[in-house]
Length: 365
Image (tube, rainbow, N blue to C red):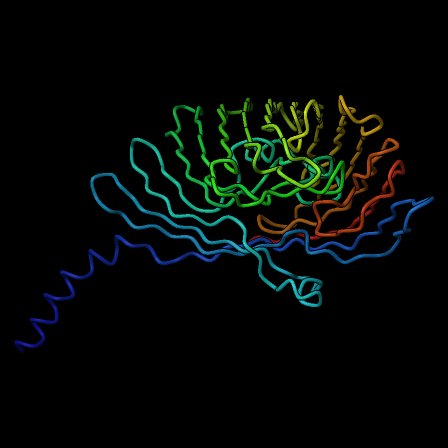
């Protein structure tokens, strides 16, 4: 009898502690599509095929523990999933790192440390109709450090104040975040002073009801772009404005991004802007999005225009099927492509259009 009483008392003492620490939650998104891709090459290698794509399918674990006095520690660990088997065949592996961090939060806000999307990227993702699909606006990012998921991030996020919030992030070593494929292939290199490879990024977002308005600023230090071809690089700075407005079944959105000294190249300045809209009809949503990248001030014929149109059909709260078409019109020295964000490394032929037609399914768990 005494043993039963002792066991009962122990259980009563331990139980409240276990309740304070939540069990890890498994979550994910499977996004598969069958695509017809064509780079319309007239001079370079021709790429025309039917392709099965994983489209950055992902899975992760997250959880938190209440520390008392309004404090909480949290964690998130996320991987991209190789659902089509291409990475396994090439040796890249089934799992690749995505966002992962430890957080400490309270009434004063949240501190985050780990590998994370920069605040500038976060703004862009909030106004994207074709995220990680053929018509993703990031197709036009080639050649610069833009919309990065950076290593070594230390960030502070303010509390949400009636829809208004802000994030400030410092990247201690931002090497290897530069996109390739336009201008010159560049990547950060670890030097004696890692501050040369740092970055800062910040945003302010107002998201309340039908209105979203956001602004972001980002600077990658010159050391991220030091190469044999560019021994005296400049800092790359970027500004972004974004917004969306919903009225009834309609939604309109747009972004404007200004890049100065892109990839650390002096006066390599250009703009990227997008505008789009959607219309919901029951379980169906029609989407249209247009984007343009103007010519660099130091590189002629490096502009591009992209159109994307699609139809989403919601089958349940977790499952959506879709059909879409995207085309990207390159100027003479631009080799952006309409499937850049889908893990397909085939570049479009410079100066030619790239086209993609896809049918896909998204399931979240």
